[in-house]
Image 1 (cartoon, rainbow, N blue to C red):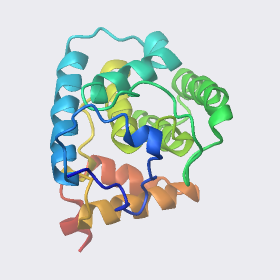
Image 2: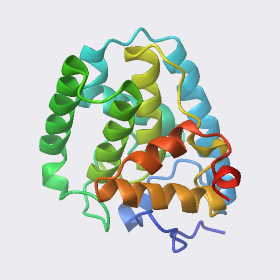
Image 3: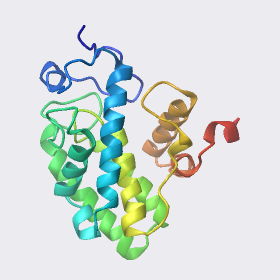
Image 4: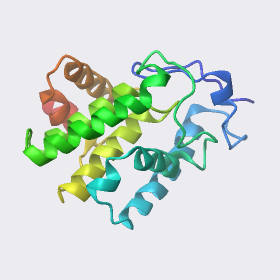
Length: 207
């Protein structure tokens, strides 16, 4: 039985036929199975990151953004680490991805050098801009959150974020709160997203 991709959650973008055909594990038949394979790959990426000595000069580059995505999804998707070749319901035009990433890297360096925001807000703002650009066909949310964690760990030498203490791939109270906080950030209010990133019991504390 082939894997269907018609089930799209709020905040996700659908894959086109060519992107779906890039699935390397042909036995996958459900979204749960796909999520499990992707999570295994992401755990390997985190192990890889722990061994890396990453300076900001390397981290804030197109090469590293693509390298991290490949490390996270390269065992699952044939196009992992490659910028998307189609436009989505989310993100900039595919022709503008490199331009917008360069602007983001330059802005983030400026924020860091001039202490424009606190360290945590710099990482969260980077994550928000990165997922808004939506460089890849899939995995942008998880990739952008891990990029924010890498910034916290490798640049600021601080603990990584909690991100609600939950898997945000499938529908849940935590995912709903996460999407809500992202939309607040879209409107320029980064407080809820920053709080969500730092809080491991967000939904209970909010209730």
